[in-house]
Image (cartoon, rainbow, N blue to C red):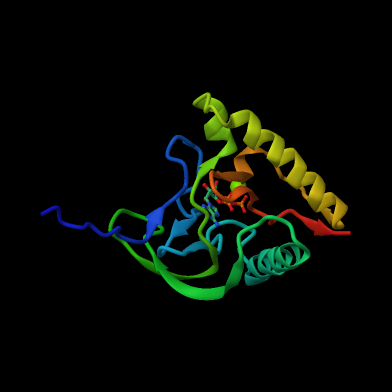
Length: 162
Ligand SMILES: Nc1ncnc2c1ncn2[C@@H]1O[C@H](COP(=O)(O)OP(=O)(O)OP(=O)(O)O)[C@@H](O)[C@H]1O
Ligand SMILES: [Mg+2]
């Protein structure tokens, strides 16, 4: 009989091909349902208020009906942020985990659904504008295509509410 295997969390979701990506700035899947975006502890932009701002704007966008991950709240989580095998406690924005591919990955791999996903991205960005947001830094790196549930905009750190 085949043994059921269980996923091991946290899983680092930062694309491995981004060489310049600072190791301390990564988003982790921490369970079946949740992702955690930790405080940027080593950069200048390291205040809790930056994380709270992102939570606040994510809540506003979610409540207004923009297709973004459902926000939860800020928690203290334990993540392997620095070196292999070394965990640290840090504050993190916890939100719904969105299964899928980033648009940039779909483009690079010539995914057959790229055109559909890209059109959905344009429409969702327009939806955000119509609902009174300035969706800054909103590009193919910050969008996830889920086959069943459609296109999600992520990484609202630079967004503003008009
Ligand atoms: N809710 C989520 N569900 C699934 N994957 C996610 C989620 N949030 C982020 N990711 C993954 O983690 C990557 C990094 O997340 P995000 O774009 O929010 O942060 P960033 O670009 O590293 O940070 P910054 O806020 O500094 O721009 C994303 O490109 C995506 O692959
Ligand atoms: Mg991003």
